[in-house]
Length: 332
Image 1 (cartoon, one colour):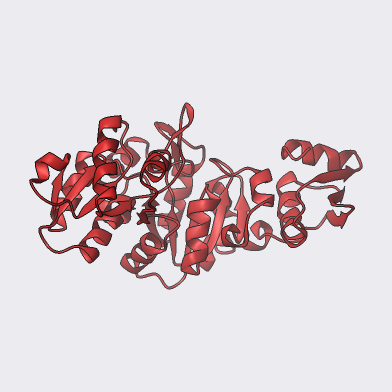
Image 2 (cartoon, rainbow, N blue to C red; image 1 turned 90 degrees about the vertical axis):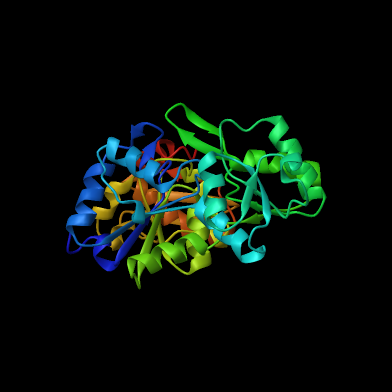
């Protein structure tokens, strides 16, 4: 891997859902790639917005899927949320928890008192923390809404609207956050991606000076990398599609693009977004005109800068090869 993308960085900060696995299903190539990264001597960190599991459970899940890890390599949005509350609240303050017991345990370990209802608080609720849990109910949202309206500091572990799974995209924590946002007319403090805290912490624990962020979401993984000033690789194994990549805002634009994690073993110049041999992309009459021949992903890499500069995402292929590549990318 001496000439691979991996060789240019001293740590890789991996997203999990949609990047390494879909629920209980491993994304092909992930175990082999992670093993190669470790054998190369590059530090590995897992940076996830999923606040439903403590690091030990994440490690158990990864190990069960053939990817051994250590709890110290895992950084979750729940940990970041607890740290954010600790910074803003007095020791012993009451925090209403909407999420899993592991999130409540992190709140307690931060020197705060977790409760589930306002009545349980027996006094003022100073904070509300919200993380993903499949067990969250309307009654939980009621308690949180009342506390937020009464002035509690509201921290969301993340605002991902969806959660990739082996069955498809499921409602994520952001969907529940949206319900409280509507009910309270308030905005939460966001602890997880795209805020840079998780990436900064992960890079620091790895002793990394030039880490690479790898993820499947533009609005969290890539936007978080941009906010932290880090290079990033977006993989098309989860949420992001070629169409959404062409429409990415400046704050959501990756350095590289690959089909999946196996891209880490390829040359950086081949993965980098920009012009590629064999493809010609021009902007004419509010459409991106493509001609030439080559790999569809190379075409996508060549399309991105022209689309981003022109603000145009519509495409037209001149020639059979161009039309076939656009079709494979889902861009026609």
